Each structure stands twice: as structure tokens, then as C-alpha cells.
Length: 127
Image 1 (cartoon, rainbow, N blue to C red):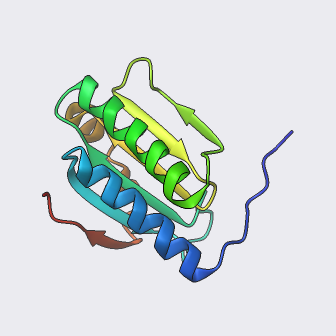
Image 2 (image 1 turned 90 degrees about the vertical axis):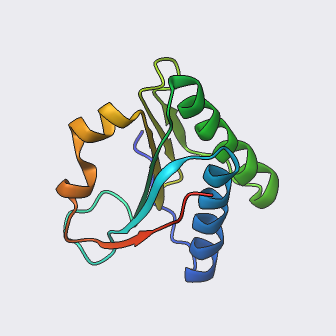
């Protein structure tokens, strides 16, 4: 059975995305960006939030903290989470926002930012 996209309000999306970025910063995630895909034809979701960790342990910890904070703060669980075992690329799917936590070499290989280069990009400072 295919999952349906949930239509969330603009304010709900802002709160979700801000919580995700804050959760990434809690674990010292690097090179955090948000891609706004809403104006692109064929986009699989509305937003990608992409970051990286310096080790597979940190990649896993970032993804787990995102899930934990969003669940605790907003009472929302991801529809799916992929890649936790290898922790080179962990994907946390919230339907309208998909979080990609990469190991740096894996991020460079897949180049999601280049693939979706027409998206509006917001960059966040490392804390």
C-alpha cells in the first residue's frame, strides 16, 4: 500500500523543519542545508534537509536525535527510516520533509544538492 502525502499547514512545516535542524545541531551535524522543492515539477516531497556527520556513529546519532526530538516535541513519528544499520546515508521520511544524514564521502558521491539545484536553498551555520 502506497503512503499518502499529508497536507500540512505552512506553519506546521516551519515548526517541523526548525525542529529537525535544531535536532541536527544538537549532535553537531555539519553542512546543514534545506532544499525547498515545492516549485519543482516531479519533486518527491516538499523539502529535503541534508547534513553530514564525521563518522557512522555520528550519522546514526543525528538521525536518532531527529526522530526523538520530533516525536517528543511535535508528537510526530517518521513514516520510515532507512540506512540506520550501515549509517553511511540515513533517510528519515516525514512525508513533506525528508531528512538525509550522510557520511561526507557518501554525500559527495550522490550529490543531491546538484541533482535538485533548481530548489531554493537555505544554509545553516554549524554550531
